[in-house]
Image (cartoon, rainbow, N blue to C red; front, side):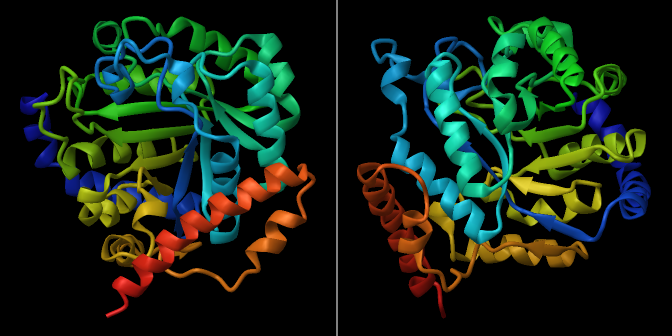
Length: 346
């Protein structure tokens, strides 16, 4: 990978200039933060060699890693009122039952007043139909499409079921999205495989993440990809697929690269811990990076709107106990966010 990237570095600025122009021809000069809302921190597969879920204690059942219903729904309320897009609703495979997922999707749609992207593994056609009233599209956690590398990083999560899901989703007029992680051992020549995959399955959106080395995984000592490496993939995809929705995943220690990745052709930004870091200098930097790239940042990660949060909860159709618990959890989140704002006001 390193040798290929050294070649790309000599060309990356030219590639980015071309990608930025193509973006401007196909999209408005805006960007936003996309929140992926997780419902669990465990997974019945649990052997993807890059994933923190693979480091969970063997004796801990994945079903014990569920978030509470109230915390999930409180986060949807925050996302709606702070102008965050929902990147997707996701969690460990096999942790929630289909009926539980359906309830949460239905609840999320009531809160956000829009359908949701769903990423819960390779869905069968009956399950896609079950969730159809609540979802705008399905996300395949494909991670990489190099067949040799994929077997190494996702030994129990083959591509074929996702490919079938994409085909079936299109038959039902759903959007499709996939994930791609830069820094796990891909080479630049994999670009052709990726573009062919996107075109073959009519992928509408791709989430291009940079590897976050997780302690306890085989990648724990790996260096994260450079901004040039991540930008190279984004720019090449923008050039090859002008109308593709590209999201760049950027961890909090990589905020300085946001403008670079947006200029490379990304539409939006994710992976920011928006509730924990709301109103901090890191959050301000995210918004400044958007401005630096010539984009208007939609929504906010720095200022709380003047909203009656009680009314936001009370207007929902849930039973009184659930609404009480949602409001309690919502106030816990808001307390942290207000504390951050006060602490970082100077």
